[in-house]
Length: 192
Image (cartoon, rainbow, N blue to C red):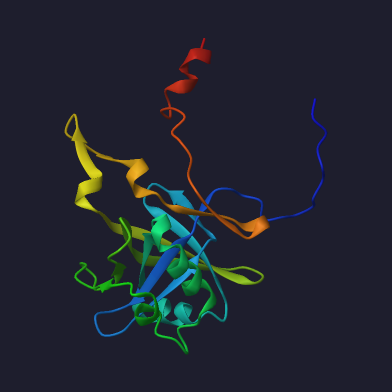
């Protein structure tokens, strides 16, 4: 049996998407990188923002944001959006990213990201250093060339998404590896 090293409390969860969060409206948009993110249930996403985040005020005002999953080819832009502040930089211009505001709510989505989740702010939870925002997914946009119908149901070509994932404890970006199997199927061999 392998010995275990005890590291104390860490942020050792992997992989976590390095998501671009867009906020604002048709007149003004901002974008930032967030790695403190996850699905809370099938229609709710949670994101953690620093309490002094410029985007937090915009999201509170507009009561909406979008979660955008960038491909690995956008790595430089993704990292920049995490280290530059919208208070002093036009991140859209600096990165060449495109804000699309033709969404139902007018909240911007990042055109270059193959997956975009339009969200309505549901709730805020104050944490020690962060504010956890819960967003209700109101629409999901996926590049049409990444979607096929299988038995009348949409299927996303996961490999073609090529998402950036973040390994927090090592401050590293990674890409995903190969598919290992189908969820809710591979374990059936162990069922009685």
